[in-house]
Length: 203
Image (cartoon, rainbow, N blue to C red):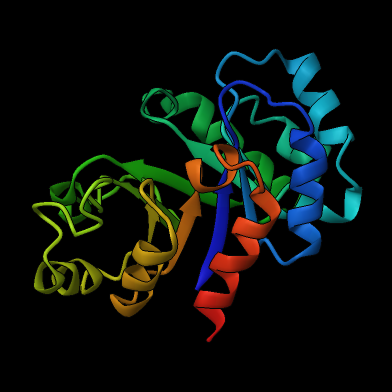
């Protein structure tokens, strides 16, 4: 199971140091999502991460930087998906540079999974799978329903509500991966929290 991490919208103290440490501990992918960050500051953020980890970063904005830094891939928001010509240019650029980027997008509800796609995505971040209070699957994500979702052939990554208990359930339900957020960034010991999750998923 892939272990991913979503950055907080607002940069935290020691955030980049923690990201580097998590990469060293085996973090598979960082989803770099900073909606209000300028291109200059995004360049500074990526540059502060050792280059040998750049191929583990998927960027959510300033997509051109994926080529400048040889990043892992790009995430398409709903807004990005509406820019047909710019997307065509992006895919042509991949062909010219012979660069196969990972393409991802998000789904906000379970019914979206059964929709056809104009573009091919390598995996999908899926919101609202778990109830944050009860830790149970939310309505629409009954295990039998999840099996039907997986028959679409789409690789699904659970985003949101991930902790030790829900990580175990996501693994049992054969999701492609989990994307951590609050479990790391709201913790007084984010490194230990990552280690705990990783141990659970590698048993």
